Image (tube, rainbow, N blue to C red):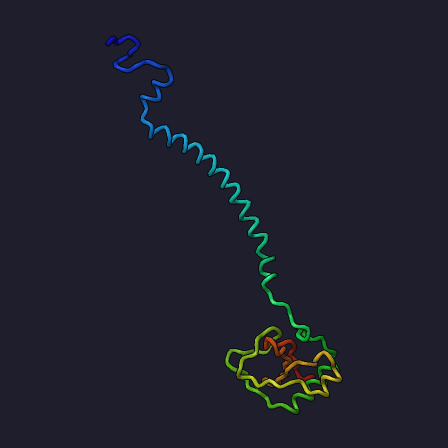
Length: 162
């Protein structure tokens, strides 16, 4: 056999010689590295936009999970001074004054604890002041609270008028 066409015991075949000289495991990771680098930059950009999309949709998801108020329920009641006086006088005469349970301070939006005795707003008041129809009430520490019976949330706090 002749050594014609061989250099240093290897066959000379141009680019194929370079491929034969380098181990295959070094070629594949280089190609994969280049592709992964390209994909990583695309994913970084897409990840950024995906994060923005998720953050922009978060308020929609929260709103979608918020239960709708029942037709009879309301978050607050607008009463005139005269109406407040009427409600206060009626309820303060018919209900006992509850001591506020520990940690409870009557305020609009606060949930009434179980220790507070609630009673339906008297029919006479509900007829005079339709906004109070279907609500419950209590006298706590000298203040009348009007409560949504569904969620037990305070929707009005009425203090005695001077």
